[in-house]
Length: 169
Image (cartoon, rainbow, N blue to C red; front, side, top):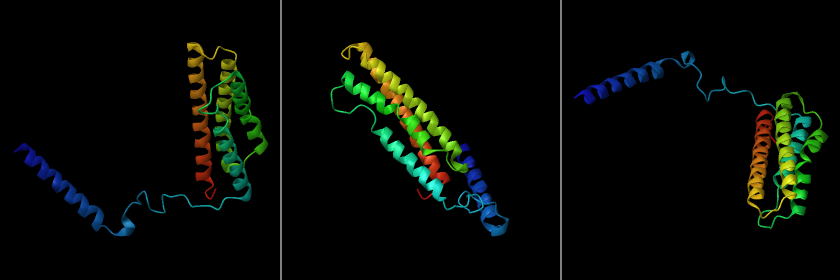
C-alpha cells in the first residue's frame, strides 16, 4: 500500500513538472545544455593555430611510435634507441615554437607530457644497463611502459584539447 501511495505521489510530481516546464513560453525557459546560449561560438582557427596543432599532432604520432617495438625481443640496443626516441619530445615541442594565445594551456600540457616521456627515456636507459632476463629488469620495464603510456595519454589529451579550442584540425 505504501509503495502504491509513493508511486502515485511521484507520478503527480512528474505531471506538475511536465506542465510547468512545457507549458511556459519558450522565451521564459532557461537555456538547456544543447541551446546556443550555452555553447561557445565556433571560430575559424587561425593559420598559425592550424599549423601549430598540425605540428603537435605529428609530434604525438612520432611519440606513439617511439616506444620499444612490440613483438620483438628487447635488447640493450633497442632500449637505448627507445630512450633516444623518447627524449626527443621536448626538443621537438620547442621546435614548434610558441603557440597562438588560446593554445598556451595546450602547450603547457604537452610540456608535461614531454617531461613524462623524458622520465620514461631515463627508465629505458637504466633498464638497458641491467640483465634483461632478471625479475628486477622485468619490473623496471613494466614501470618504463607505464611512464610511456602515461605520457602518451597526456599528449593525446593535449592534442584533443587543442582541437577543441581550435576546431578544424
